[in-house]
Image (cartoon, rainbow, N blue to C red):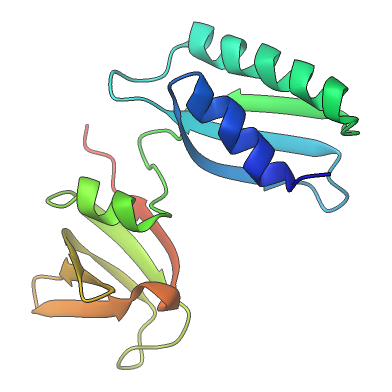
Length: 143
């Protein structure tokens, strides 16, 4: 059987959406799939992706109890290198895997990627964190 994430991404992108991330419960009984699209994700979009994934799971013999498909929300996670380029200019919260100057949590304006490092303007200067050292990064919602 092919990798589950690869199968899910193939279905999601085939329907014209971006796969943001996949979460699963410890034994894979609950699958959460987060999708995005430029004009924003609607309930109908989630339903269409859910229906297509359900059919694919049946064909591939993937056993699960519950599937949830939704938008990533206003505090969208930044996961792929392209995310850090696409959302340059937006405020983000970033958590590093290892401390940078006795600190692991930072907030600032994302400036993009430079030589494989995420660049964030923290207001106190420019922070560069290797992409591999980013534990978690999310957009800060603006209301």
